[in-house]
Amino acid sequence: MIPENINNITNNLSRSQQANPLAAPLPSLLGASKGQSADKIREAYGHRVVLFGENKVQEAKDKWPALKQELPGAQLHLIGPLQSNKAADAVALFDVIQTLDRPKLADVLAKEMTRQNRFLPCFIQVNTGEEPQKAGIAPQGLGEFVHHCRNITKLPVSGLMCIPPADENPAPHFALMHQLAKQHGLSELSMGMSDDYDIAARFGSTIIRLGRGLFGERE
Ligand SMILES: *Cc1c(COP(=O)(O)O)cnc(C)c1O
Image 1 (cartoon, helix red, strand yellow):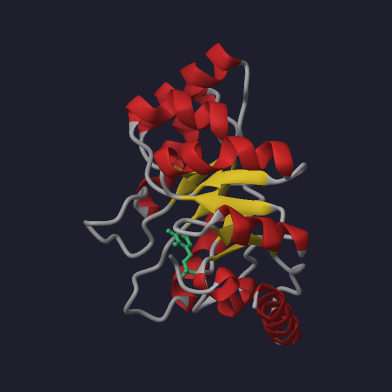
Image 2: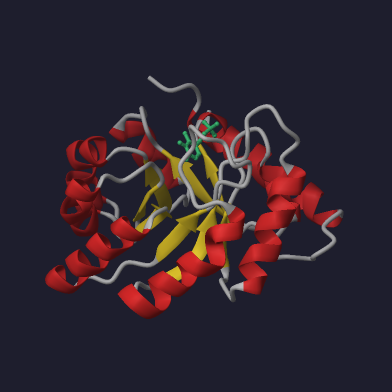
């Protein structure tokens, strides 16, 4: 099932690239592996998926230390919210933090990275729909937050990430993200999930995060 899914994803991406106004390169596929077994993760890796994302520090701690030994070159991204008191574990375990969303967390992460001498690239999560229940920096606050991360805490910020509102057309959200990344000189854009990755690719996504569409339903 995973090989067929990867085939479909690749075909859909190349089709959507033909209508790609930016002529952007194809995004990398990140397996959003929350709720998926180590076997499924191994199988995806066997089909050349090397980026994986977990939502919870605890679940990642249970699954990944062994997998990392087994799957050389696999890169683990944190794609769920991070509490400050888990920052030390997150810095030790993950390779990229995609959900940097507040100054306090930036400060704690910067301290931990220095302490562990492990400097992970960070993406800032943007709450493009300004949904109160969703994490992320509001678009109009992004400039100030980028400045804080770059100049005050000296965090390695390399991209932006978003989860558009579930009930809206995602295209305007992806377009805004493309513009914000350009404006702030950020090269990575983590956007697009199982239901909208082809649209995200047209707006310059560099990493699409697929759970169900890659692994099948969560266990
Ligand atoms: C679960 C999750 C995904 C993958 O969702 P699917 O709809 O299963 O593709 C992507 N990004 C984040 C942040 C997630 O929590």
